[in-house]
Length: 190
Image (cartoon, rainbow, N blue to C red):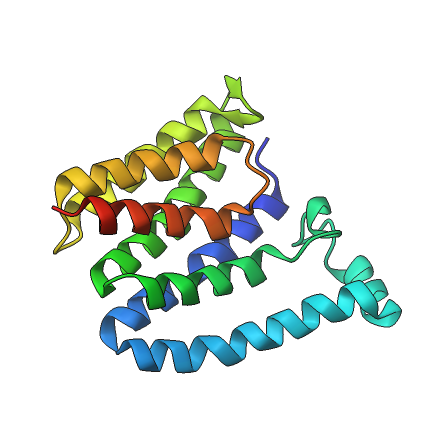
């Protein structure tokens, strides 16, 4: 079921489109110069909430059940993984692959959650087939319309990212999705 909390989470997720768009309009150096301090700040906050009781109680009172999911209590926040994977994706892959991989993470993951929680009925590994189909469709659209990407490698990347998204892998999907998509496009090429 699609809740107000999930919609709010996805609005925040969509707001991060500013990162790949900003990267497209600037340089790798500018993007990294912006992202690294932001990541360090998030990491410090994340560590404080795990090891400082005052910060932990603030998070418990204001964020859990509102913006943060229950599983983020004992792990890093999704936003920390997101910024870390964004930095890695930008550093590891050519610009067009990095941007497409980030678009897949942001747009396809949002589509999967909205469709899956909104109308999804058939479950596989705790995810819905309908959400996964939305993820795959959105990913294919991204790689087919984004310039300078091979359709074959892009299609394989869309499929690979979808498989990673649906499998019950213990790695946070904010980390795994762009790295898997980027690696497939990079190594398959064309």
